[in-house]
Image 1 (tube, rainbow, N blue to C red):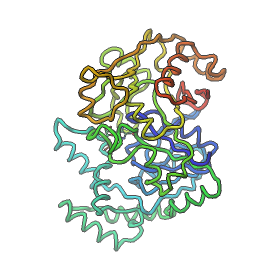
Image 2 (cartoon, protein in one colour; image 1 turned 180 degrees about the vertical axis):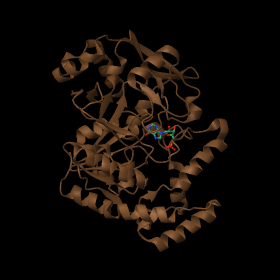
Image 3 (cartoon, rainbow, N blue to C red; image 1 turned 45 degrees about the vertical axis):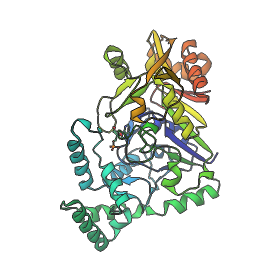
Image 4 (cartoon, rainbow, N blue to C red; image 1 turned 90 degrees about the vertical axis):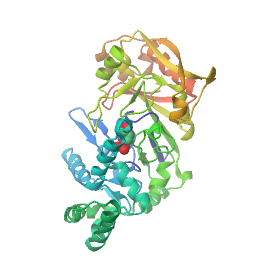
Length: 414
Ligand code: IMP
């Protein structure tokens, strides 16, 4: 299967970094197609933990990294992450699309200012300048990567930006400097990827954030500023939809969300604290504590449907170890009616009442998961298998991969 898209099925932080790393071990190329340095993809190696904000996490597996035009680029992060790869002995043959828009300091400032102006209705952004950069792109006042390589054109574009925002932009020299540093990576990613797919090579499209943060299909306005669903791989990279062979939906064994917005199955108190601590549920990019909750099948059904997910990778099953009873929201009740699937519009979600199914938990030593992962699926506690199989039945999509720890090897294929 040469073209595989990996996406998150929840509110991001599903563990896409690990899954991309695993799948990229057999791939020729791995591509970021949307979002920017708001993403935090982690790869845990036996002796090190690598955090990627800009480069695809799959590049740690040695696949050629690409950054396509749908991404908003933070050039300083790129340079740091190239060094990170070098530190593990990989000299990346990185290719960045000249058409990707660049996040400026101005955009980060605006991100913070707009959040303050929203007051109690702040989105809770990562303040990485993502929204303002995509806004300038849509306004056609954005700065593209290719502009960094042409000082005269860049100066003119920055002057327009100054007039549009009414803010002085004093970044010209810095941008020219960073442009020189990344110039060797700039190329026609879109043409390259299509040629690569023509040759039968395997390409992984590494999505960032999650379906419920999609600007059109998420819990707007508490969303990010890009499309995060599988179709975004096509628009973000200039590859036709018929190119995509498989869509892999990554979901955590429970729900989390950072930032504000509706969360029907949210947990509070001791249970929430326990899951947060065991799961290390603190933002990779911002360090913020994540909100946690039970699995939400109606929202997952929506996520699976709109990306036509081929199979699911479920992560962090180990985190639920030791809980006597587990709940899964199998449907909602809205105005006395049972609802199995829902569009995540905030107006609709504010009215839903989750209907839970309760199942038995399992209790083993956390340290046993490594051994069980080596032995395979059949060795898992029956209640853990039951939990995964129930999710599979409720969603009607196979859960082919179950991850029980951050490192590669701490997972089983089913
Ligand atoms: P922005 O993408 O920084 O504008 O933030 C918008 C919303 O998306 C906020 O709720 C963020 O917490 C959330 N968000 C952005 N990127 C990620 C991510 O990679 N994981 C989880 N949440 C994210």
